[in-house]
Amino acid sequence: QVQLVESGGGSVQAGGSLRLSCAASGYTYSSYCMSWFRQAPGKEREGVAAIHTGDFRTYYSDSVKGRFTISTDNAEHTVYLQMNSLKPGDTAMYYCAALDPQIDCSWYALRLSTPSPRSWGQGTQVTVSS
Image (tube, rainbow, N blue to C red; front, side, top):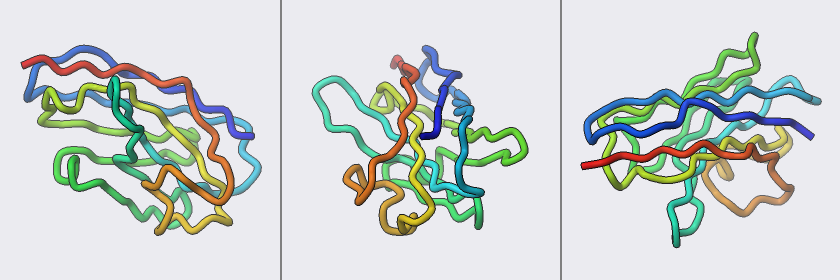
């Protein structure tokens, strides 16, 4: 099981930027499908960005496309989420998640339900004020 620790959350005003980090350990495979999900109070958890750490393909939800950028530093086993032009609607707890490489990342990257369970971090809070 991969262990994930998120950091970088905080409070910013609308239009501001934050960079989230997800430090991973306990890797069993050489690559993973790494995703960022978020969950606002009373709402379902949703996938916002993902990257395959082997082929570096990236995936974004429509709600963040053009504003968020996901990247990976494989040497450091760390995945980043650069969030620009933040909006109050981006306020949520943000979770990092890892999916085994046997699972099709191109299909499941942003889907909550997967054939095998993801590893999850504890989350980091992002609050955007207007």
